[in-house]
Length: 276
Image 1 (tube, rainbow, N blue to C red):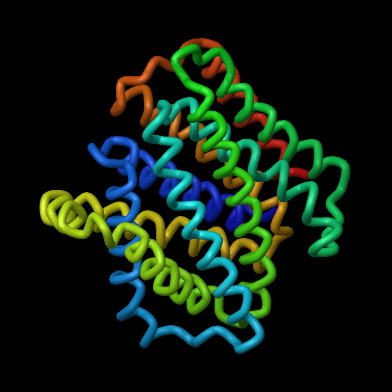
Image 2: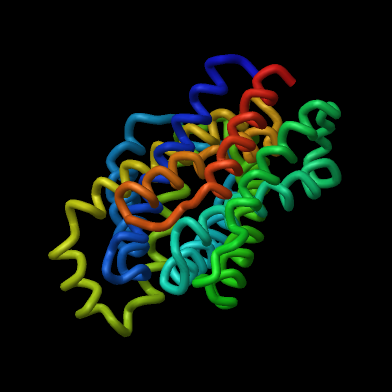
């Protein structure tokens, strides 16, 4: 993996951790998630005029990914509603590339080297190790986080195929955010008055989070057109390093030595992947 690709994926990881922190810090996790997803669609919509539209072969994958993202956003909000970011984030982000690694060979025909598999598993192992020893985390938070991980792996594989068939990573990314927002908005329609009140109070935070999520996933999808999907998915999980710092400094969560050691393991895996 080149230094450019490595830098792009690490930048995407930082942006991803940042917008997840925005959701976790908000008073209502579901409304915060809906606000960011809707704002992302509004940010993406005018930009469609400036990018090449995705090829017709990618539209079925776009539709499938949009449906998958509806499930993802709901599970993400539930995971943060029931547990700390420093517990839920490692589980969902650590388990996801393990699922992707297991499925990428039979579904995408991608074969990684032993060194690449080893580096990816070191990253995943470090991320999962961060989720251990958190007594306050309930069973619901763990189950929601693992469900989110499975959803992440699913849409990662879908988008890995779709973006390669699109001929336009930017167009595919923008259309994905535009298509993902309406179903999510419809899901909170019975609480529309409360949602509107939340949006009026927190629209600035929602806008900042939306820019972060569009850039984060757009960079990751572009990287998937240049490198194996499983490799990008695993390296992207270095976002846990940034999420750990954010959770400890800004959200005042207890991190501890064990999780700091796990963060070091992730950093070692990222460095190994650079030379794999």
